Image (cartoon, rainbow, N blue to C red):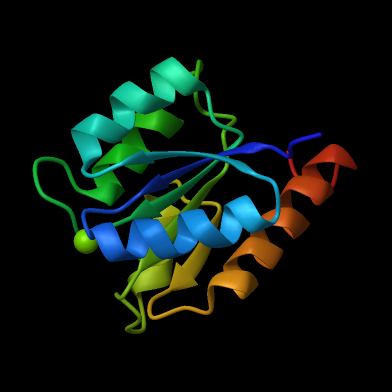
Length: 130
Ligand SMILES: [Mg+2]
């Protein structure tokens, strides 16, 4: 039985491939988007269970994607993990203010990202997250 469906949004192909591979090893379904506008399309089509969202992207950045999704009742319940090299003080706060539920810094250890995603989804199932 496959696990939840994860949308991986990043304009860097290598980042998408690495995370996709790690998620698929753990039996997650994976969909991808290469920029913010594509991400909004894929969210509407695929209704993922969680979004891993790069912040710096062409066309529409991740902060704006998070704001739009969290502002739309159809999508506001989908957890969003910011996935970003912005690791300065204040960047996590900025991501959370845009609506991101958690924060993963790049470079990352893919299996740790997968573990964090699993933990979050398990917590939701058990009612520990809204
Ligand atoms: Mg980027």
